[in-house]
Length: 230
Image (cartoon, rainbow, N blue to C red; front, side, top):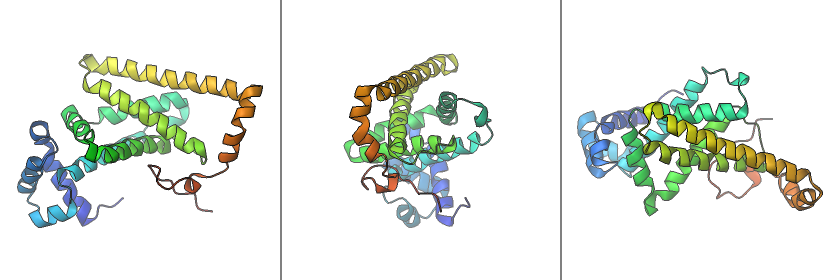
């Protein structure tokens, strides 16, 4: 995607802000310093980022998603199993982070009540980007359940990673493997139950609901899905 003048200016602000975030967080002080360092007109900067550093924190997170998706294009995903694809994508997303403190400060920011909804949307967006990048083709309720499950795994892994001091983050990758294993075991158990007589009986309403495509479900659910062109 070609950068517009607006996105280019926001990138300049973000680049300038990154060196200040470890000390001042995603704060007004950081935003003011970013304006001064980047040379972007203050009025223009406020127009581009109405919420100041909060909008830069959002841009930082989305930049990480974009870098991950781009990096995944160089990976032979077709040769991997689903769990391997997801594990690799989550690891890649964290390894591409230029400074762990930027994520730590962002986690603190988005834990605040007034920014919690934005933080949840960003995590959902990361999960959505991963599933799309590895070729997810679900178009029913599975579209939501996959992203909800991965959002939980990713969030837990990030929190563990922020406190991990093991060499090469080996403890974090082991933690991630365990979380993925838990999900796979749950899916296996769920599949076995669904095939049982009781499961088939209880699953009937969900089968009916699964006929609704993602766009037909409640509009206030996080994330978005664009149906394929016909």
